[in-house]
Image (cartoon, rainbow, N blue to C red; front, side, top):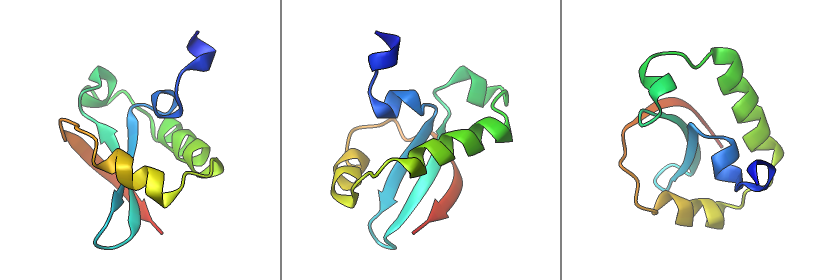
Amino acid sequence: MYSERPFDCRIYPLVVYLDEKTGEKVAYLDLGCPAVRESRISKDLVEKLLKLYRSVNVSDEWLRRYTHAPWHNRFIEITRWR
């Protein structure tokens, strides 16, 4: 079952939203994750998660809907790109 989990679960605690004002994709780390709160997420892991995210063709429309999903919004912004 673990290998069948949804893509957003695979890249957690990385969360990517679409900034509709700028058109940029914005990557965050979720403070709901204890490892993030305790600064136990390495830069290497974040880079691997970003690389995985960018290797998948996520449409802007899907990302727009995902951005509007209810989240607690306790995030740390780590990067933006177009």
